[in-house]
Length: 166
Image 1: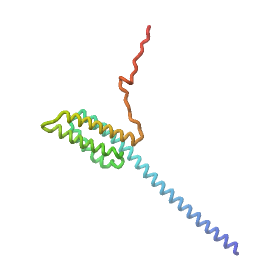
Image 2 (image 1 turned 120 degrees about the vertical axis):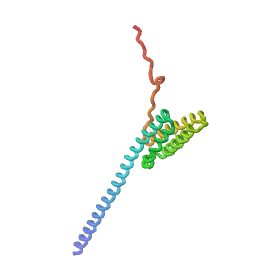
Image 3 (image 1 turned 30 degrees about the vertical axis):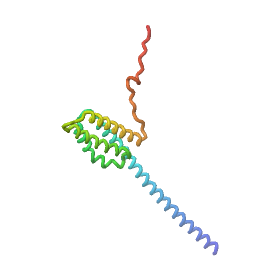
Image 4 (image 1 turned 60 degrees about the vertical axis):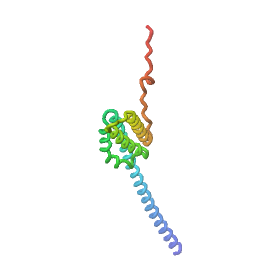
């Protein structure tokens, strides 16, 4: 009888421990699955935000060359809602570059509308804005672990054609 009780309690304890182990295993898997799902969602939003940021910065760079700065400022301000929704998923230093672009374009618009405009100051500010835009693009490249696209110029990228002597 004593052996029977010992075996009974041993089996019961083993069963309880097996159930407890199964419950803990399922809980641990569910917890990890939630973390993985969260990381996947964040990565997806990060890729989307970086792609949009890249396109917007390139558009602003192009507009700075083609249009008056007040039009560029309107474009930047129209992106304010996008920026507020996306800033959590953008690279850390990109945010500073974006704010610098916004502030610089605002200053350039003010310079262009002032009565006594200093052309040299406007040119220097445009150079600074281009530098900020390029740095913002570098932040995106770094965040996405991409290499910057370098375009060969015709001077360095094209080899002269050799003519055959006939």
